[in-house]
Length: 260
Image 1 (cartoon, rainbow, N blue to C red):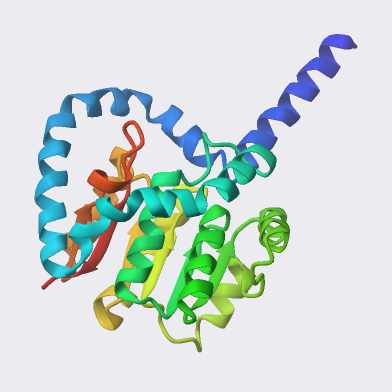
Image 2: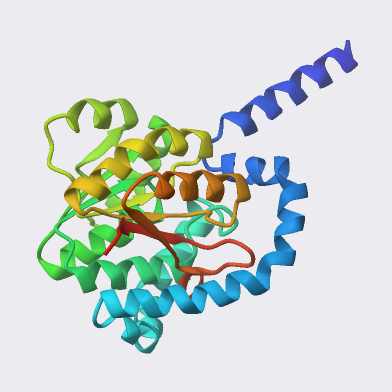
């Protein structure tokens, strides 16, 4: 009887982990651990690419080369809320890192984003709304496939008196997006990488036809990176490594945009 209850509890715990949207990338990384070990051999290549891609991006976005001069000030602006978020609402292991949050804030300012799509609610929802609030422009729509996580995001935003409307379930977003104009900046960071892959073709359409800028996380995951690279080869779209500004251990972001 005790053994049966133990297996039952263990099974429930395992299912809870699998269903947790925020732990999905971690579980995915565990499954792809052999490939990740091989990735360490490619670190020199990634370092070379990060420098090359950063230079290309600085050429395309005047002012981007000033990021590292402003990074400290932006981190200070976000630091208190970030520490509160990772201690009370999430964990630094699975939440958006502070350096990535700082980059997103700066990049939103740089391009003067007016319509931001936040696919994967959390601390990014706070960062984008802080930008919009300070800039006095910008509409931010945060989307999640987990209703419970949307509620947690709303609770955190309310805690800091940040506008908490435009929080949509993935189903609501898919339905409403049929009549909505494309965003000019999108962050794709939903917990399940397989779900991200399902959404990417439509997002690539917005990149190619509406000049949307798409930032994706977990570009270090080999199977995900190959999937994105293949889509880019099939379209007039380029992916640039953001490793120089967003690296956390092996992981980093990338920027996807229409080819020049």
